[in-house]
Image (cartoon, rainbow, N blue to C red; front, side, top):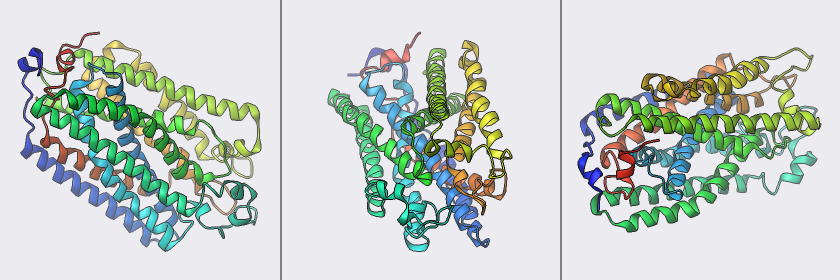
Length: 427
């Protein structure tokens, strides 16, 4: 049975025609970005730079989709009420997972059919490390070979996407079906999915971050890398959620449904995960700096100095972009109640989130590209073009998947048991 409050506020029908037109435009933008990225392969000696840039784009959007999945799971496990009216938009976002799996496939094919070490050096045992020895004779690789090997990489990557697609399908089916019959068994199904999905999600996102990003420098040791990735996943999902909320509010869909307190609540979550990200990132840096162990410090040295002792471009990206852009600027903005509830301001903060998360992904991935001296290649170069086209290309496909799913269900879960509390949400 739906609550009286839910019956009092109609669930506005999705504008199918408008969504279809926008979806078509997003798909064209996505294909355009992917085609321009692929064109970069025509430049001599540019294949690895393009592949690494494409890894940034795929990982970035997969992280946002994972964040949406985790937020939906957390919503159900806590039986939250305030987030019910915006949960549906995250559920639509989960439709991107199967397309992200397809978009990840070019990296796999390039690694196994074209050049084994085009992205991950450890896939090629003959890959020559800086200093002259090969991966196959590297003691550190041999210690990790049971984990870092082609069969495990393929199997685990396939398993990640299977689990994410399966969890998403269960959550979407139960939520969408409840709109029709209002049966509480769908609520129980989602809580069961959340109970098993949270540990599965935590494990898969951690191993995905290790396989896809951390293993680019497999000599490095860090026990906090999965948590860093989780923080960016959720921050990206919250930012995307805010952009969708403001877009639908201005379009008229969410007027009379969203209130000031919904924006304040999601703004508080954005602030909380900003602090959480800063705690994790600072703790990792401080512990490595304090221990001063070469197997750990080299990762930061690559992002600070060149072989001759001069500062490289990544040092200033770390200080200005990561420290101030990723933490201090959004932190001080989100301290303000007025900024959290003012739609055009919180939307600008959300766009800022998405920009600095992309910068953080670049900071963790792109320094694996090195010159003949072993110095990390700069970000602000031709490689930035392939990063941006990859992000636009993969992003266009993900936005298309969201818009394609948008008209298939009600705007809000009209028969969810918590919908009444959500519509009258107060602090």
